[in-house]
Length: 448
Image 1: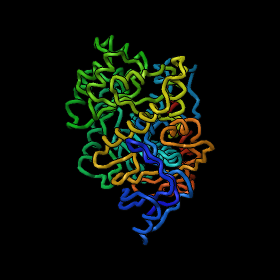
Image 2 (image 1 turned 90 degrees about the vertical axis):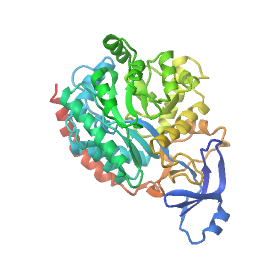
Image 3 (image 1 turned 120 degrees about the horizontal axis):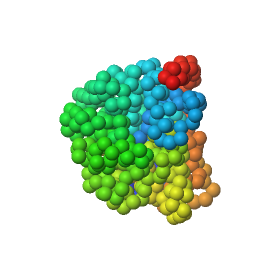
Image 4 (image 1 turned 30 degrees about the vertical axis):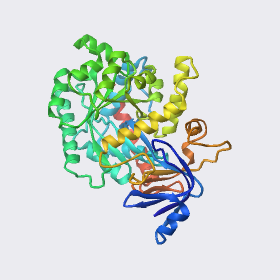
């Protein structure tokens, strides 16, 4: 097809905005771009998709999320409200993930994928946990991803908190799914695999060594790192090492691994993350909600750390994560010059695209250029001030909104058009989720 009547935002290394240009899509990729009249002449018999004067840009990327947390929305916690991060884990997330059954895993993924498509998020990196439904859980999520039509990197959260049997099952699930992906089971190239670990404070040295030994070379690890001071305190008390140093000792860091949060790391740990090429993901909405602090992202970038933007299971409205990051660093540092828009764009656009291309090495994702995947969104934004490649990040922070996204496409396939979802039955998914939620909440409450 030819995408016509749009204003192209390319998000290439040198970003460009082209009015009056069109995109020719063939076999799921961008095969040609240029002035619309030229493309129409070159491909006169191709179908045309009218962008109706909207901005056409690469789909958003989420570098870290948790589909399984979907059923926490509106759920009343048991007892007194948690007073710190450790109690949040103990009173909310650990009882909730133990309450999930395979059908809950499926629906939690579908609910989040509806949210992703509707809000223009076309690639996601998920971190899953369901201790009572481990075996095959990644296949359940993968089936939902394939049905939805987006791209996702999946892993299972290995932890020792549910006993030796749970640890072994989590390791097996990661290795099984990694093997599935490496055997080329995903012919469309929309799935990838990492090895998931919860966090240093719930994984012993023996388990880390076993995970490292059994994981194939070239496969990265996806782990929460120093989200709260409790993670550092636990590591220092038990092992005499800070969290990043401990992970480095076990050879879990590297250019294929993701360190999530890194709120409470020191300068030496930042240097180690940079030297190993480990990716760090920043989730400001979650950090604020959990009151754990704000990571020194700008220092990490100066050290050369590859910092990306995730949402930690919050809604897949990535521009909301932009806005939160833009504001919270100013407030936290009492300095309005902190986290400028162009730096934020480097994190959320350039680095997120670089991460997803690392996880999907046979593809080019995150730009509009010849050879890139046709993962694009249409944005019905009508600025009343000039919009240029230089000031675009500030338009996103102060003007763009997810409700403006009308069309979502991945690999040349329309997943939503004119705000109508085409691959998922949103009404049915919401209905089924509402039927399951009371059962999940009851299983959650029964643990107290």
